[in-house]
Amino acid sequence: MLCDAITKGMLVSLRYEDDFDDRLFEPAAVYFSTQHKVLVSGFQVANPEKLMDANEPHNFEVGKITKLEITAMDRVAPVTFDRNDKKYCNGIICPLEPN
Image (cartoon, rainbow, N blue to C red; front, side, top):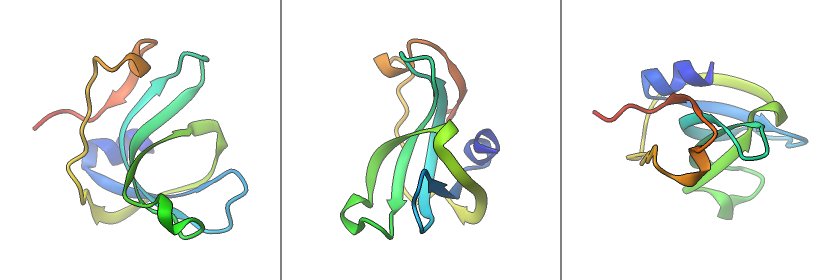
């Protein structure tokens, strides 16, 4: 589902670990971390539980996402994706493709 959202340029609503509220997130890439976990990188648009954590780059461990929905909202910010970033050295599952 994350790869679908990336391909379609859509935001996702997600709940992470023990959050009570959903976050709004703009995914850019799903990848294998150096600790051999699957992560998603992108831009956190809103976090109702921590308002100061909004509008910033963020990574989430996919296995700790407890709820995930693709929204009807298009990408809001120009998400940068650099496939040469060292965090992607173990492999990219699905990246945001440049226009």
